[in-house]
Length: 502
Ligand SMILES: Cc1cc2nc3c(=O)[nH]c(=O)nc-3n(C[C@H](O)[C@H](O)[C@H](O)COP(=O)(O)OP(=O)(O)OC[C@H]3O[C@@H](n4cnc5c(N)ncnc54)[C@H](O)[C@@H]3O)c2cc1C
Image (cartoon, rainbow, N blue to C red; front, side):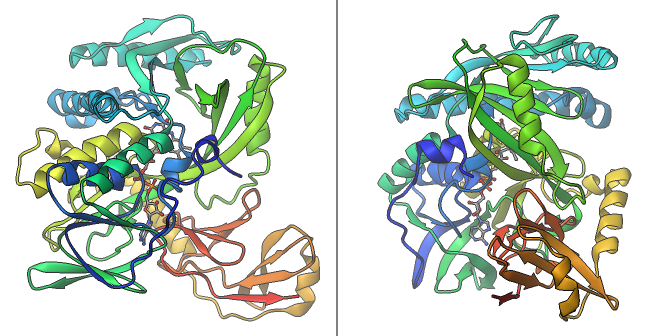
């Protein structure tokens, strides 16, 4: 299933060059999503020699499957920030993201990037009267920190029972892969190098520099930026104790009716997120939501159908053109981690935990990390300090994480109870328990069996079967593997061991 963005831009860089030897750079950036690419853009513009190592293709993962609203409206977040962190902190978070909207617009103009950029107002609405007070409060708080927001009773989309909404004016939307493609051509013009199909497995210190290793080569660089969405290095850093991952689904539909203006998301669960987009000359509607924690032991089969129902409630003739899903990291205190990766790894930087608002936050991160590497002070850096431990003070989330981790830390022997395999239907995957042992089995349409040990190669948590995407998902840290055992989402690096029976 391909996203609208992947369909409109098939490849960002046609020629996929792999890292095969030793290469030298000022900065080695691991990860070619919007974060890595934006950071490389600023650094290469400032005269630094950058090398990007991407395990797959550029902007194929979260960035290629996002909904790409460019906004400082990150849910009803400002009240939450104010209560825990005070007014100055909350104001800085808002200003950092507002600045990012301007930065993105400036880059698009300056570099003449054709990416369907469009100014839009952003709204958080509710269909639940009990949420209205929170929305009114949020408007007051945004005013108190000097921001722009307005309470509105009605919104344009024809959704039933809308009670009210908060509007952030002059936000924006774009096609993220067209934007990344534009940045990539500038990075190359500035002398940057990009290696795809180049999965990093380790970073080693060597005197004043680091060596960043893939299976076939390495890069020597003074500075390293980990922009892999979920950091691929466990220790030091310990981000696996400070974050979890959530998946959401999206569809793009066409209709003969005229679509609304603006970008929308509700404040309650289940999530409904709406925006319009260009598919060639056509204007289409994107509906996304159905969020859940990666690896949740729930049936996901109706995720796309539920989104289609929402589209049809507004536009009865809606026809689904694209379906896709992806995941993002959420820190325990909900604030992204941007800056030093660990006090024990000088000159290594990280940007993660964007909680599904990474279009602006990736730009904030790119600026903070660029400033750090160039030895400049960034006025927003202290909001996002990545070495903070306060995240762990969110005891409820931390307790849930530990519960999930300890529940899932099991080590099983790899043994297959043959007679039990007949229970598995074609197209189905499940964990079979037999004689105190567990085995993950998927049977394809031809009856071929794919057997894995359902233990994540990251930190040994038990995997669960995802019946919609046909993947093995880790509930602890969000790594995912396809039914053939190939690792598709970090932080795991290694594939699962697999046995295939015809
Ligand atoms: C459904 C959904 C909707 C969203 N909608 C919005 C929205 O409307 N607005 C908004 O602001 N944000 C949104 N977000 C969030 C936003 O899309 C992300 O925060 C952002 O795309 C993250 O970009 P990234 O570059 O950090 O990660 P990615 O795009 O995932 O890039 C990381 C890259 O690192 C590579 N990598 C991983 N491991 C290795 C390795 N070992 N070696 C080399 N490379 C590696 C990956 O292949 C990948 O290409 C949404 C997120 C989701 C899940």
